[in-house]
Image (cartoon, rainbow, N blue to C red; front, side):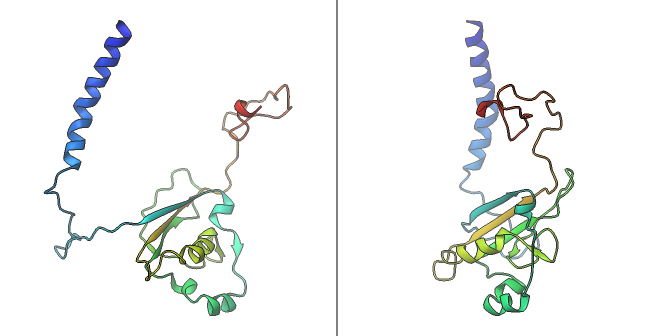
Length: 178
C-alpha cells in the first residue's frame, strides 16, 4: 500500500507541473515571434534534421585535394549549397566545455576538422539534394557535433580483464555483450 501511495503522489505532482505546460503549448492565439527587429513575423517551415556525431571520422579529416576539379563539377561546394540543404556544426570541439551557437549555412568544403579538410556532410549533401531541392520544396538540415581524440573507455577504467575474453571492459565493451 505504501508503494501505491508514493506512486499516486508522484503521478499527481507530475500532472500538476506538466499539464499547465502542455496547455500553454496548445494556445491557438500564440503567434511566432518577429525577427527581433520589429519586421515581418518569422515564417515557420518544416525541416528534416540529420545528425552527425562522433570522433575524428565524423569531424572530417579528409584533406581537400584537387579543389579546382571538385569545384568545377560541384560549384556549390565552394560557397555553400542552396537553401534546401542547410548545415550547422562544429568539428573542432576538442574541449568538453565547448559551447557554440550555430547559424544555419550551406554545406561546403572546409567544414572538417580544419579549413583544409571536409567530412561526411559533403557526401550527405550531394545525395540528399536529390530529394531536398527546389522541385520538391523540401528542406534538410545537417547538424554536426564532434569531439576528436576521446578514448573509447570510461575515465574510470576497470583494470581487471574479463575472465572469458581477457579484455578490459569500457564503454565499447559492456558486460552485456560478453
